[in-house]
Length: 228
Image 1 (tube, rainbow, N blue to C red):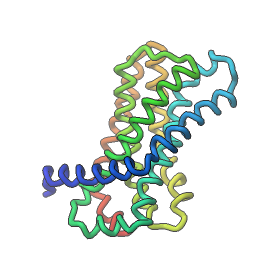
Image 2: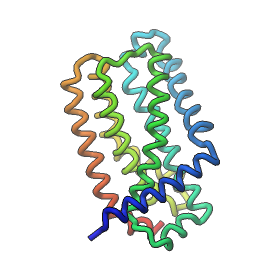
Image 3: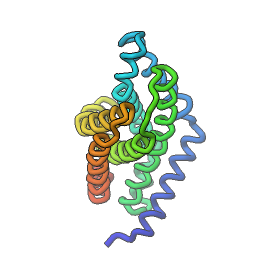
């Protein structure tokens, strides 16, 4: 039976390692944030300068930008470890695989949280969209981020040891997280349109998705880590 305290301890160690790597490399601030904001600006030019159209499309554009940035964050999180032999060190460290999975997922989720705050400000600034259901927005972001981070950790380690991991990861991950994109967009649309009641049902779908992938990760991460 897994020791919950040991899993949390090991997860904190992995999160601390990932945060130190981020502090030294500044990948989120120097690469992911500019990329995500540039995507929002390009969407604005590609669709129409009409603010009304941009406001209506802002929930979907927000989550598309998050999804594209998630791919970069996951590739970065696992490519560094593969290149520097950190993955081998983790396998030999004696850390609980469930703790490693949880730590990786939390680290990715923290990166995504920073991105979502910046993108939320960008949507308001560039598109003129103002949310009317802040509680639903925060809950949606939390559930969607947990689901994306959990699924990304699984498919990231699955593709980490392959030569074609940079092209394989999007092919594996994007179909899986399509429900997140749909549900999060619908929940955001409800929050922006003052129909939060419908949005909470979509939030429930996001929460179920996150719980499923967290549960899968706790049991499947060890064999995937061994094969990576």
